[in-house]
Picture 1 (cartoon, rainbow, N blue to C red):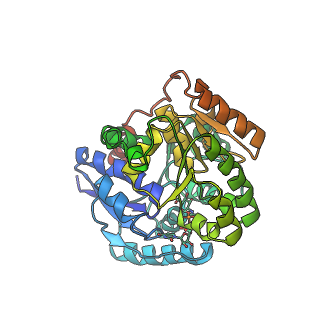
Picture 2: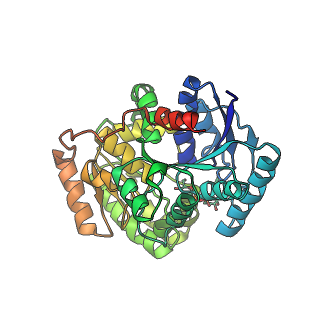
Picture 3: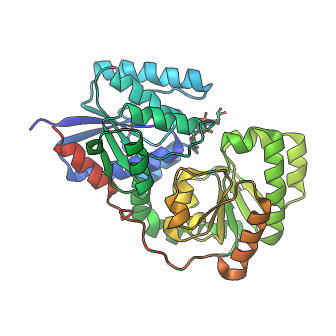
Length: 368
Ligand code: UD1
């Protein structure tokens, strides 16, 4: 049987983590030839190169170098540049992951050429169409031939939207596959020591959603609470470039000056971040992936969002949605610091077992 070429697309930080699991698993599928297509949506070394290196990803077969721009321009450039590549180097399948602009851009360029699309992390829905990611998720699912799903809510959502049941496969979570592989090394790293901290005695914070960081007034309200948090426990805060832009404004700089225990640092690589996450007393975040990673690691997570597209992290994980309820936030922080944070080991989330990528590749390998 002839080899089948699969273009595996990633361009933003979380998606390098996810596709790494597919490249690892691909060794067992000699009939599949995976090509890494880097869109260049993230290009700073600390958001891209360090991830590629730490995760052992191959060099990109092609780099679209799109860079930053408005949504329209960035997505259009991804479509244009990926179309150019795939016309001359046609793959049999285009595999996209997650919900970023690179995901919908390459999916759209592919279906227009009748290249079937496989969507990994399909079916997740926040039901909040003000999130750019929600639009990307709905659109990508609507044009994908295969929907690879991480949790049961995704199956329900896709069925409700009328997708053929045969296209929907509950396979588990490729981000957790990578965590499985990297956890022992991250454990040894003890990254908290570099910041003079002790295991279990600090909070780990990340913040980058447009709805939280793009408006100074909203960011200022959140920062007030984080300054309070830092009076209770040291906080390590690697700052995403989107967030940094606004933190540099005088009003917010002033707020931060009064909070020496709130430590702003540069964005971290995967290993350092995982190491800090697994030994933290709690994680405060608006990231999607970290809600899942903390659930898997049994670290309490307080999510600074109104909703989540990953409801299993609320029902079977360690996640609490804060929804701007700062009374709830302070109560949960106090509970966690009083030792009521780490949940009793709950039942494992089905299929989050380190083998999701294998299940995905098996389906693609066997599809005619
Ligand atoms: C993107 C994704 C988001 C994901 C996040 C992970 C979309 C719509 N958003 O958001 O879903 O959670 O990645 O990090 O796809 N910048 C740099 N260096 C870089 C990349 C970006 O400095 O390498 C700056 C640019 O000024 C840019 C801003 O960060 O304007 C935002 O980058 P962008 O890729 O547009 O969105 P993210 O906020 O990173």
